[in-house]
Length: 96
Image (tube, rainbow, N blue to C red; front, side, top):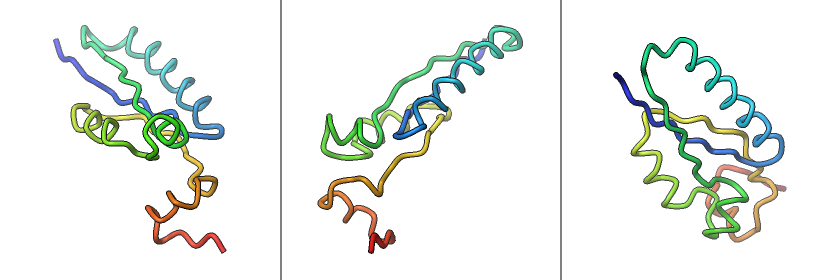
């Protein structure tokens, strides 16, 4: 029996709604057709959640967590609303 670990990154804005619904659909679908495979959903902080907890939109705990998954669901995040000191992490974004 196969076991899969999926990272769940809720993101910002409408992201949490999208990912929550996606996880519900995956759980319903895999319960019917997984043929004994098991799925573990691991929530990892990203976006404002990461900033609030770790002062980083993609903290190390998330990066390490993703390395241990077979795949992930990632929602949109709102980098335009990040504090100025964190926007330097995205040099290709022109906020002017």
